[in-house]
Length: 95
Image: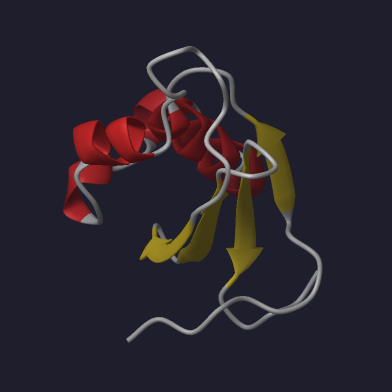
């Protein structure tokens, strides 16, 4: 079971369309790597399902709410529909 992160995120990125892309960008930013050097997101979560759950509604409005937290690449990733952002946290809560 993954616990919710505490403290300030090491990286906070907004997303417009695909939350999965913002997850990769956030991990790359925190770890100082190229997005192409990040492992497959599918090892942690289904990227297509993530994008569907956090996509705009059928009438192009942002989702009213919803949050998911999962470990990936040694970090905790939080996707927040209300704020339309992805946050990456150090696993030990620092930063």
